Length: 244
Image (tube, rainbow, N blue to C red; front, side, top):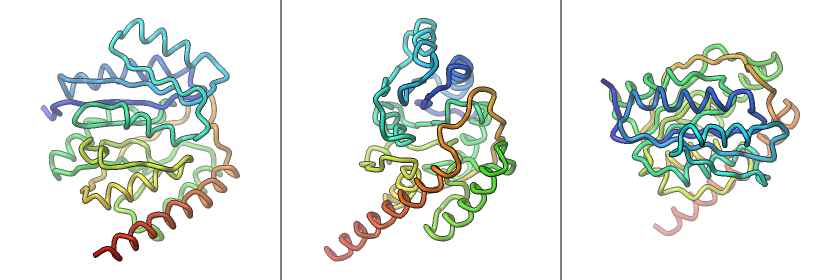
């Protein structure tokens, strides 16, 4: 059996009423197969317009140990994931989106790869992305450009199917307030000396709702946000070099 000593699983949920139950149930089902010390965390990542929070409370009744982090006043968009990292307490942290475009049965692939490579971070990457044409087009362009402009150690930065050793997360102080937190996360982990591996995972069409980002807002946020993160990271690196 490919297992972990302990594992935290978390999801950010926002307008995800239709996927809350299955996400939480799958976290317990598949998580319990890979560790005997499991922690499941649900982040209410904004002022949902549906019954996302009510669904989370129902899951809490079924699973009293479920941790709910209520960030209904969140104004940082996808950067809300940093609160998942903050509240996780186990040796390893796995997170994915709460919209069920990934399946948790692929978690075992990440754990197998971690064992094989002894990596500190294992990231999924998508071969076939199941989104609208414009999102797939922009995603492919962004995937190529970000890999080569930012010298990323992984292929698919925006594939949020990630297993991370928590000892490295404890070294970070993430500042981003947008989806550009993904660039900050990966480059900061790399700077701390973390080793990376990656494995192919399946991507599925949405079964409920729609993304809170349209393509225009996403392009604008990534262009501005990633540039800010990159400038800050370069400034930190130059500051560190000047002290040597």
